[in-house]
Image (cartoon, rainbow, N blue to C red; front, side, top):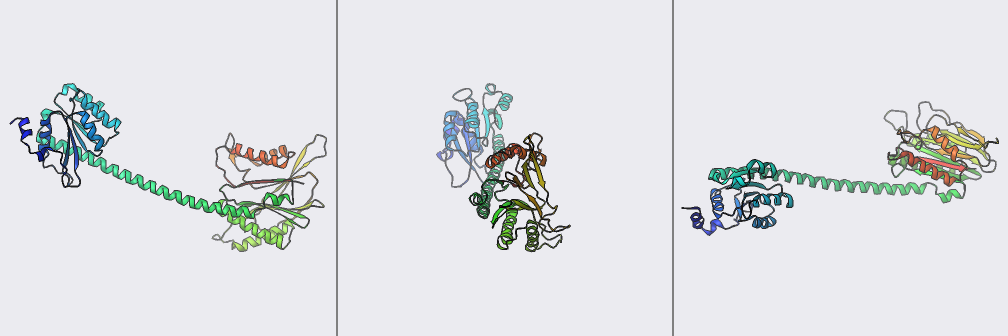
Length: 440
């Protein structure tokens, strides 16, 4: 019986693209302009079962019809493809369509050709993304069965890996969403804390009422700050503090709020205005509140501070410092219009537990009109940047202040801010930044 007779002899139930009752099947597309080839392949795979699934066949007699099926059936596992159909390269053109236009690299493609000279095997395998190449003279039951089984095994492995990849990708997406949501929640909380911290710091409006020629450059590293400034007028005495608490961000902000509360208690309520005594009392409060006993397991957090009390009538200033100095720039009486920078040196110990704890000294100095006072933390000086990516350093900071001290205080702030960001460049800000300037 010839192939055409075999084809005609098959019942309709054997040759139509039926969908069986089985929910899952391997979809195999046969593309050949010889109906007999369809029949031979389907008979060879009539009882084929792999991974508990049989085959659902789709057939096309041209590359053009195959494209229509592929556009409708995106999950076809295997194509058994003839090379020469409506054109000599119809099959190879279909491979390009699948890989390049449909961007389907999962589907397995096996070429079957009765005219191997039209598409030499080595050239085709090298140039096209196909999985196997057979001649039609090899079309027997065993070859068909093993070729299809090997192709479906490969397809199944690829799909399994892709499923794992997509599952992992989805988990990463979901986890990223969780992290972003958590980060937003934390950021919102910190922004709320920033509002609270800003509320307890003196506003520029309140400072102007007691000191009208000043600037404050305040740049927290992480939204909230461990640096803070404090300015109050007690009778005829202007009390100014610039403080650098241990740490930055949220831990530093907790310390700063404690510092503000304690300064209000000591200076405003008790009206203690001698800076040395204020620092001594403040240290005892900090040690008690933080339960600092000197044991290694206990807190060693503290504050560095520069504190001045200026009599607004006599211009006498008292100063005490815990690691932090105050700069005084005063124009000299010389004809060359030079100025000198005087560093009011602090005691080398923090406000908090310390191994060599002594009383903070109270220093006194007579100020003159147009004297400029500068208070600062170490954030500006320690910032890395510049061409060599090193610290700004104290000497460079001092030179900058001597260059700008004659300018209006708001302009000095702008110059300092621009200098800081130009120096920092693309580097991270390493610490909170606080610089205050006041002209007498």
